[in-house]
Image 1 (cartoon, helix red, strand yellow):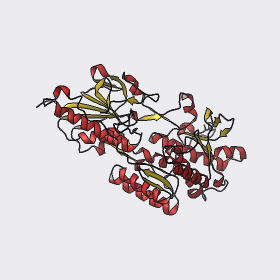
Image 2: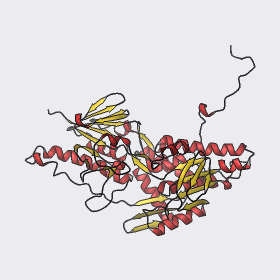
Image 3: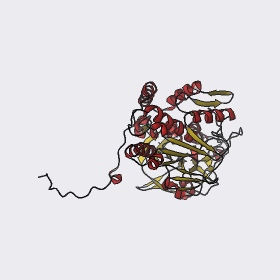
Image 4: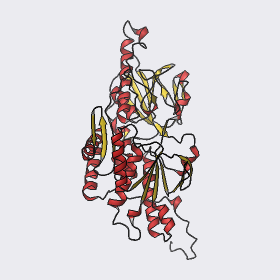
Length: 442
């Protein structure tokens, strides 16, 4: 029997996972999925972990569990350090993996537009650990405010600054407002949680720029009704610990600073000689192969592409899922064509990827959202219901869907999210002075 075609997929997100699933149990392929995390993460709901609405396990599932029935797929927990493209080898921290075809689906990370030093003063939101840190930071700040007697310190502790008026920033702002004004309103005795200040900064002239203007206005009005302070126009030109400086001279002093203003492709793309945009995204061929590397493909947030129909492919979960499936389709078609009289032309016959627009949506706190897909436009409660249904549908695994549904139902009925527990790492605890008392231990 002919040796199977070796496919290495880097990244277990929407693109990588859907590619692996599309190649599952096809004996013509030997698939290795490499990720530095052992789980697939449903990123659209990360903000709900950050705002204590959901727990981490409700939006993540083990990659091995998902691919348990895929006999030809191996999952490797490792960090990829280098792409030896000329030799068709992946070099990781713990080994090397040869391939016949490579799929890059490593996603994106938070971009500070060249000001990487700002990262140490702010929180991004791309991983489970990011969401846990934000939740810990905000809830711990409220605990500090509860025991503080300094009014200025309380004000700073009870302020959250969010940079970026896209879906992530809007959803965080609305969820934080719901958290403190609904769920936590009776939890504290020494502070008034209605004084909690949420500042959302967007350098453009409106929020949610990919949406229709009336949806942007609705979002702005809704957030302001929720008590969110929205600043449009000025941009952040400096970030210090606990302070955002705007180019109009204003300063926002806040204990928690969240950066939701930009993304950049994984730096792994720099290992390949290929055209990239300013954000590091690869300008792929229509088939999603990397120019100059016909056996290397890119999918998901790594891709800069306008499809044959003129649609700019967005960095959204549905697009990543479609791209992962398309790469698998191309790989299967390549193998088929190599056994026909078109073997010498198989590269020219690769099908082009066409983005199927599933629409865009964003939630703005309890009972409110905006959604649009082609001619369909929704806002308010109908859009909120659509948001809930669609996000449940995309969650991986029945158990995850049931857990999220129950958590949402409990939170909706009682305004008491169940994921408010956090722990203070030992490294963050104040050192205790050495005791002068003799130890009672034997």
